[in-house]
Image (tube, helix red, strand yellow):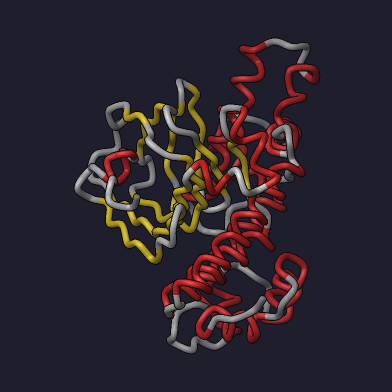
Length: 299
């Protein structure tokens, strides 16, 4: 299963590195790091398997079956065999985790029925699911026996499918009604929200709302209103998600950087502010998260 890397255009550019972390019967988990020189679109590629892709860092644009969206570290994507994908890298690089699943494995999961019957799902994870994702990768990198490997993958896949089913329709599904069912307006709003996500991903966390609005050519009020409608999240909440994920990456490093320094590097007022935001998003203070992300084990 993991050997057929040609099913993903990001793995065939010569600038992407895939590391298979485990592949018990019927399911595999890999990390993929892409750093491409060309920022144009790859050639269309037909995907071969059911797949779950979870963003880790960086960003890219993807075009699946003709529909273009922006993907970043918060993204969660479910694709099916036969889906046609192209990607481009406006910001230069991205890292993600990929699960590849056989249909027989999916059939064992009650929450997979909608995925098997429809065209997949494209949205974002939340902070607890993202932490579970990072913990899973930490565990696999440290090494698991095949029995535990299979159980943890099945449990995580079940969690992803339950998360997606709880959000059966993406937030933008109601956007057509909000704007009078004008497809052109809905598409323009999606582009505006995606452009704001690009700006926030490409710059540091010191940008003000006015600066982001100027970058995308909209008023702060209009941008805030459209972003909430398209993504289901406020700009502030999205920015905090990005900051939390950046902090988790830093805490996973073994350099022991003081927490006050980590707070300053990511635009928090102080260490207490950092601790409060992390508790709100993932339920743990930074010192405990550092232990979890460097040593693993938190079922």
